[in-house]
Image 1 (cartoon, rainbow, N blue to C red):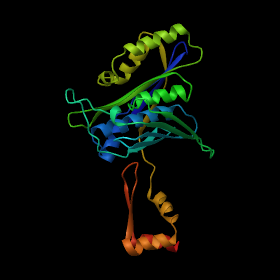
Image 2 (spheres, rainbow, N blue to C red):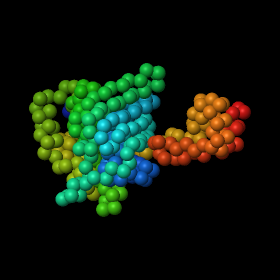
Image 3 (tube, one colour):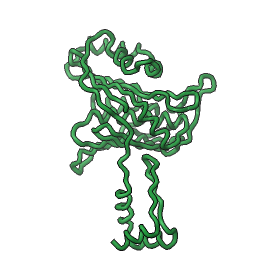
Image 4 (cartoon, rainbow, N blue to C red):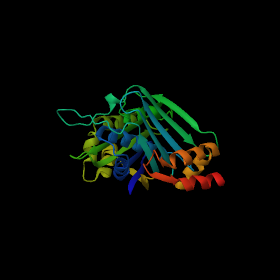
Length: 288
């Protein structure tokens, strides 16, 4: 199971979340059979949503949509406050790397678009916020959303590193936020440290990347770990849920499926699980 650690500076002026999301992104890659660029883009979106969900209370559900007009299409993720996240990318087959270094490319192929969040508090009135994509690298777009929409100055780093076979090697990231009461001197000190910190990819390659991230964020300043929470990829789809969806189609359409197609197959977009309904299953739904 992956983990997310919440921490706060001893002064109470800054808080930081650091994540190991390796299994989360590895599971997503396996379920969707994504190629390199699609794996990294989807992985970054899942990590961003894990951070966003950890910032909510109660039984909220958070949907993140990264909507670009280029190669990837839309990336959709849904997370909850219990540490579960699921997601998919429309185009699973984007596989573009720099020739000289082999670096997986994401930003240039996202295109123009928006970073959309929908927070459902369970009250029937979800809150939606939209900010423009500023780079397509997703981490920068997420930081811009936090600063502009939630009015909380934030630094974000998130990435997915692949091995020589383009399988997920390690994934994770961090979020650092300025809290009310921070002095200009403190802010300048943290800004300098963030600007000078190693690349997120370098930190993730450390033997203990969770501690490497915390050390890079806080330097020699004291901080307190507030909690350590389990996070992971989990889909809440079920046969019963898709049965309910089929029933909404009405008897005429169900009868046509039974007579013309002799059944139905439904695949969950979020996890790739396929549910098969035979002709007899459809007839039973009609009779019920």
